[in-house]
Length: 405
Picture 1 (cartoon, rainbow, N blue to C red):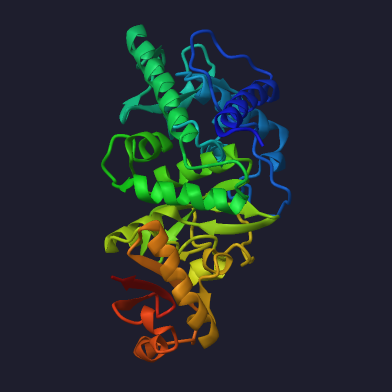
Picture 2 (picture 1 turned 135 degrees about the vertical axis):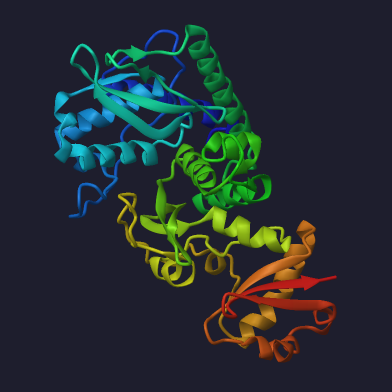
């Protein structure tokens, strides 16, 4: 394996070259270098509504052409993008939005694109898309007057915007090159390292200038769910892992769209919500928390998010049923019996002490031990671990924090 810096350099070069070769388009002089992927590939296909899928290679030729035009236009910071006249038909609006969603969700590195566009004919009869960009949190787009003439911002403003993008890309790269990622790590270990870095270094906010994108998360350390998920998605892909932005609604809030991720390990998909972990764990001042790390559809549906509710075209329609890389099972923190409790609690206390952490995480199998039974369970472990230790139950008595002095 290459060193961390060399590997990242190679990946940035590969994705840039692959975009330009795949789209058959060259970058305009003076525009920021796009760091984007070739259209994202899924290994399997499902019969689902066109407005719901994220699979580029399931699109027909006309939609693929639109995808490539939008992707290249956004990457090159184009303020107007000419597309085929067919897209002005009202009945194709949903298809246009679906393709736009695919571009947005598959390319987190387009952090300057706000995900919104305005379209219509110009005064020459061409059908034009005008993207809304966000430059350091401020809206930036071309306007149109009553004569349908496109009015562009002054050249100096465009130049400043491109400079900000270029500097932001450089800053993101600097952060990624210094993540705690090392040679010999397994994909699961890489995933844990990135999750835990985001957990510890990003503050959950919904009012910072770039809280909706990976620049806000990685460089400014302030983001809400979309910023967390796009940063995680981007880094996972740089590390060679398949990762999606995954959308739905919280069970207790069906009005606000939430975004998290799905990641593939050994051919199986898992759901992971860094935002959910950060907002839950940090409220208890815990070093780290992994409740939503590599979970199944069933777990997420029952305990946190309403999977496959009205997802407004964002649902990637994948299936997450595997449990091998569930965080607690993979790390041995899953307690199913008294023997597990007796052997694993001392082990996790020692691991936490070695890291300088005041607590540790366990997950009890359903029905193993109620909160009222924990004092009896403590008697199972070695006496030197019994004093000054307390357990706190979460999520119906299955997720447990242990504190010790």
